[in-house]
Image (tube, rainbow, N blue to C red; front, side, top):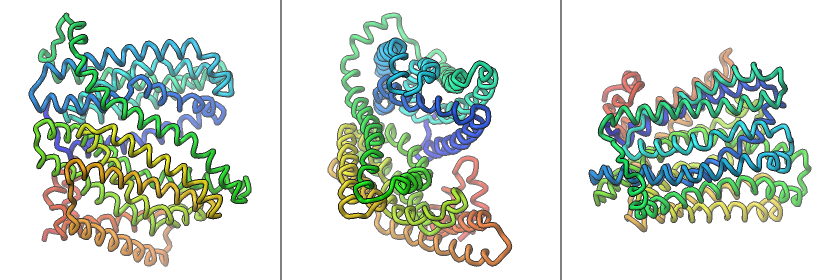
Amino acid sequence: MKKQSLVKGAFVLTLASFITKLLVLINSVVQARVLGSEGIGLKMMVMPFMGLMVTLTTIGLPVAISRLVAEADAQRDGANVKRILIVSSAITGSLSIVVVAVAILCGNVFSAYFLTDQRSYYSFMALIPIIPIVAVSGILKGYFRGMQTMNPIALSQVIEQTVRICFTYFLVQRLIPYGVEYAAAGAVFSSVIGEAVSLFYLMGMFRFTHRRKFHIPNSLWSKITNGKAVVVDLLQTALPTMGNGLIFSISKAVQPIIITKSLVIAGVSSAMIAKDYGMLTGFVMPLLFFPGFINQSLGVTLVPAISEASAKNNSRLIHRRIYQAISVALSVGVPSTVLLYLFAPELMTVIYKSPQAAPFLKFIAPFFLLHYFQTPLQSALIGLGHAKTAMFNNMIAKASTLMFIYPLAAHFRLGIYGVILAISIGVILETLLHFLSVYKLIGFYFNSLEGIKIFLAGITMGYSGKIIVTYLSHRDLTLGFTTMLAMLTSLLLYLIILVYFKVIRRDEIGRIPLIGQVLILLIPVR
């Protein structure tokens, strides 16, 4: 099985994530048309609990598997790779049985008291089969990440969403005559089918890539009982990773309560709270997080890459891979931040028809530049075997955000801007803690000259884009077309400047899969 480089693996996952996001959007449109608002409401009541049940089942093992498999593969220890997969399967299999049993036994009570609508019981029951499916696919995805082969994972994501869309339309149409609660359950079950087909594909790829090389002996129990050290190694990474997920879920649930209470004390009316909070969370935050899927893909590939280098005691390779990740994060973060800041009124008007949300975006965008470094730095910590440190850093940052919301929003009378400032403080603190942790471990340094070049390219790109908008505004063109043309042109200019500054080389662009040979035609030869 051929390994992929850090950048190529990240690009493959980025492309798949982008396609998946488009498919998710298509699926939401399909559901809105065939299911209606009431059916979507019943479905969405149970979908958040899928993440919780999956977290409790997998307990962060996919990330731990990717780290340990990368280390074992670097040491040419195939027996340990088998042991990791067997022990992981035993853990997730046991947890799946427990979680499924509790969900089935408590389904009626849960839907009546926690989901507020008894009709959601059918959707909740339809969701349960996904637990063991996601548990097994998580193990396989962790394995492929550890082997630094991202193509099976990328294609499985696209397959899962495509199957989900098809079965959503088919099942809802068949079940809607029996009632909206059954149709909603059909939409939920389409997610289960999508995950199942994706799992079959991953299993097929696993079998194909190994053929006869990966034989599991009959003495399976002895493998498990002799795998105590593997269990300890797995849990050292898995439990802090699960802790990160739980911290995020808890803070996400508590934050709206603190925000609304703080704004009420500040004298903001209920109608204005709903409006401002809706613009912040529904309009501003999705735009801020949208470019982040690139860094998420980079973070997934970085964990096994760092683990492999660490297992070989190759500190030079560790530094180089972290440096690559930080360079990519900065190269993505700077243009994203500049465009979001300078084009805030146009973006909010074109996308959401809400120009009044533009000041919120302009206020938070500069702070959010640091957010692009969080995922690579956190992945570096996990890859170095310090997942617990990453968890504590996240805990401190999330707690600080919650702690600052009340005084800034209520006592300083900043209103929703106090909330934005508290969120920004959390972003700054988390990034700083991750950086200091990595620096303490390996003494990491970044080329400041390269950073200056990227910032200059970003600023030049942004203001060139604004000049283009001003010029095109006198033409008979729509605001949407003008904004899109200006942003695409300015991004091409940004790429040309980076090549001119020798931050990236022309031949490196040409090696980008699928689009590299097209982009290189637009870059002038120096």
